[in-house]
Image (cartoon, rainbow, N blue to C red; front, side, top):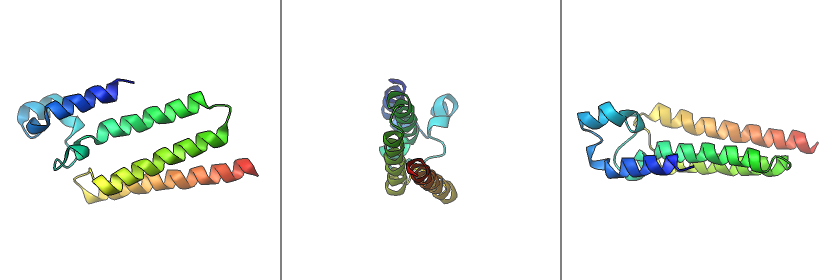
Amino acid sequence: MLFPFIIMTYIYSNRRNVRKRKWIVAAGTLTEEFSQKTILQLYFVPVWLFQRLAFSAIIVLVYSYPLIQLAGIAICNLSMAAFLIIVRPYKLENQQTSTVVDELILFVCLIIFAYLYMN
């Protein structure tokens, strides 16, 4: 649970060093694919980890209520899609577009699952 916060703190404290060789060698995988114009763009990995933790928590904690699970995961997907559209964390446009499309396809699948479950 604390891991995304630790990564956010680590990125924030080193935000001025993300272009330096020492950072790239030590922790470049946290920031190398992402734009570095704003701190929110650098926070993509921790935000993504929060989403995965939320998925896990929803699946485990509300296992008796599948429609609530679907709604919770759908909210997480739409929130991530909104984050991706507003913040635009990726350097490459094709990565940005494919990630948003992936989130929206997953959302459509959730709607289909909800429809099938209710019928």
